[in-house]
Amino acid sequence: MPENIPYNISTERDRLDVSLIHEFLRSSYWAKDIPRGVVERSIEHSLCFGAYVGDGQVGFARIVTDFATFAYVADVFVVPEHRGRGVSKLLISAILAHPKLQGLRAVLLVTRDAHGLYAKFGFQPLAHPERFMMIHNPDIYT
Image 1 (cartoon, rainbow, N blue to C red):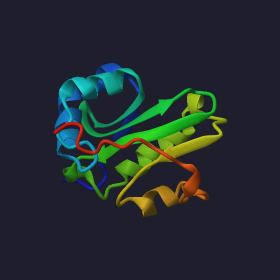
Image 2: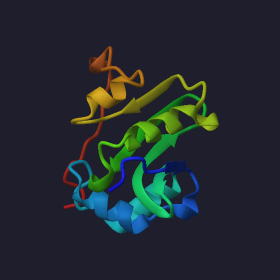
Image 3: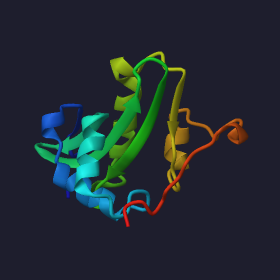
Image 4: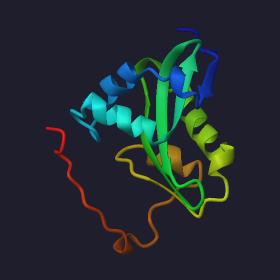
């Protein structure tokens, strides 16, 4: 595969390959066995970013936000064949530069293994994790 592939990032919902997104997410550690209908609803209610080579989607991220004070970065992935080529950096850069996501007080994400990537964009561990609480149902899709 050539090294200088022209990737582009888009928020056009019609370009999203929902089958690709569902297939990836249902095999991921964070959304194992997620039903397609849940993926479709999550896309419908989020600001989504697709990474593309031509018309083919190779990456994805979605933002859950009120567009005023808070955003949550979710479901970030790059298909294995395109990893290590800067696609995730393009996605995160596009998210942080998006006009509707400016002036937010907080942008949150959860990751098991990509701390180094996100730190390059200013993400830091929680200053006061004891203040955060959640209801977590990790096996809800199984």
